[in-house]
Length: 346
Ligand SMILES: NC(=O)c1ccc[n+]([C@@H]2O[C@H](COP(=O)([O-])OP(=O)(O)OC[C@H]3O[C@@H](n4cnc5c(N)ncnc54)[C@H](OP(=O)(O)O)[C@@H]3O)[C@@H](O)[C@H]2O)c1
Image (cartoon, rainbow, N blue to C red; front, side, top):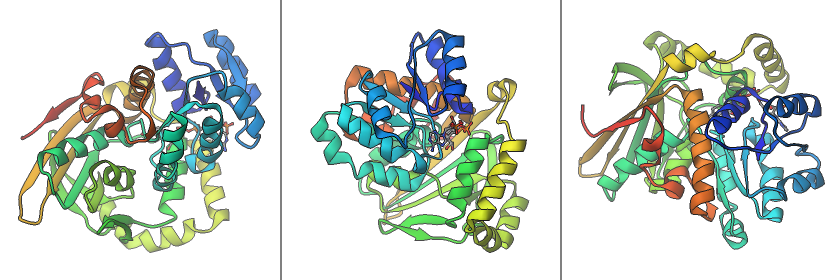
């Protein structure tokens, strides 16, 4: 089942699933948006609102696996995961939200007992970075520090921007000594060499702060995204104001409405032309370090392909428990995504 099938990313996943020979049951809360889409693809549709648990259970009872594409996931994951535990349905999503990862990992025991898996983050956030971090960590047992950076996501969708508002309203963070620790937005800026050149990167609250800790147990983690140096500098100046403003619900509501009006997400040409470039470095207290690089598809294209591969892997392997992509499928899972290459040196 594909839940949230009619959203921007939901539709990309649907197209990819059909292309790969799957015939998912489509679901979402709006009958008016869901039924025309199901008719267009000749697929079964089941309307289910996360606020109506019986509806969710009736829908989920009919399938082995649900892929949730309806975000911000902080608003959708609990009712869907709870319903999955009732119906014995495995759950995957494409979140990048730290509280959602944390929440889902706390269901590990119940998922194992029920014989299902819960695998959040099977999109661009966090498959390539989680697989790369795990790959590097396996080469340096006992590492105490992990840094991950990426160049990409040049054209975010409305859903991604709305989710970013929720994330940024909480301010910047890193992981230190195993705990999530505040770091003012705009600080910690540095340069990183990727396969496509050197870029200024800025710490951002990326999902790996939770998932890479779960996958590698490394206690100090910083996640960075590439920005033009001028933007990183501007963010440092205005960050306190932005976080302060975004902590007011009325401001967040106005921002969401503006995004819905103006943002449509990358078009097909941008998705085909774009690419993503990642770097990970693990180091230990003696100064030993291992670096690795990964080049792959544009983020939304990657998400669609990776999410469908993840569903197929769950059906094939039948993992159980609350897992990260690299734990569920191994660090080489990402290499199965077309156009992906990993490097040990530059
Ligand atoms: N992991 C990644 O790399 C990755 C990549 C792409 C997107 N994402 C994330 O995926 C999410 C969706 O992005 P998008 O671009 O597809 O956004 P979108 O076009 O705004 O679509 C969001 C979808 O979620 C549904 N939805 C939202 N809140 C809901 C709720 N409370 N109950 C039921 N359905 C709800 C919407 O349904 P209605 O129309 O009925 O509201 C819609 O189908 C975002 O959180 C985004 O950050 C992650």
